[in-house]
Image 1: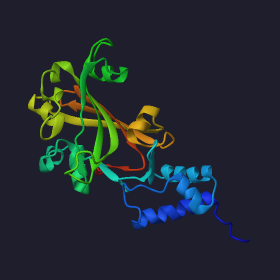
Image 2 (image 1 turned 180 degrees about the vertical axis):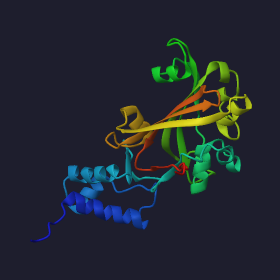
Image 3 (image 1 turned 60 degrees about the vertical axis):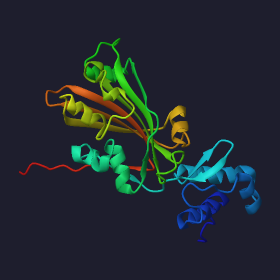
Image 4 (image 1 turned 60 degrees about the horizontal axis):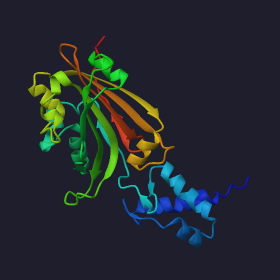
Length: 265
């Protein structure tokens, strides 16, 4: 039986993929426009758009409205060490402001600080229940689009790799550095420890879903690319939940790693 010839979309996408992987189009570089690809390949305009759409679904390309298509700034995986990332030495390694910055440092990427939205509001029902709050009570939140980059000297360079919202009880964190932009070395977990609320147990749950339109826009991904939603609960030795964080992360660039010891029989 004769081997089936790949369709136009698959063939052209494979050619562009090879050029991206070979470095002809390096991370962050602009790709030919759909009109240019249409003319070069002798294809319909919609076919050219479908080529870019196929590469978007793979996580190799992203498109900005009115600006064109670009190679994803980071091609690879960021490994989130769910076991060791919250150890004090790990989350403040090299002066990092938390586990996320330390993870990027180990990859040779640069943490790109961006403004954190800080305020007090009624938390989602699940967060209020975890804190033992009345449904009308408020909690402190820190909401940010977390960026990575390659050039430490260019503040405008970088790309969003996750969205994160962290919640804290007001009676613990109110009026502390947790309500400031810079929480200092080690981040909010170190500041909670300074206040006498050392986190002794972490519980995380992970689901895969499609992003909301707002999340897709913030992450510069198509709305049919799946994301991980990771919900993080941090508890003291006295079983008090002192932090709940919700992270939304593109599935194509994140990998989770966990290690634990088993009891011997």
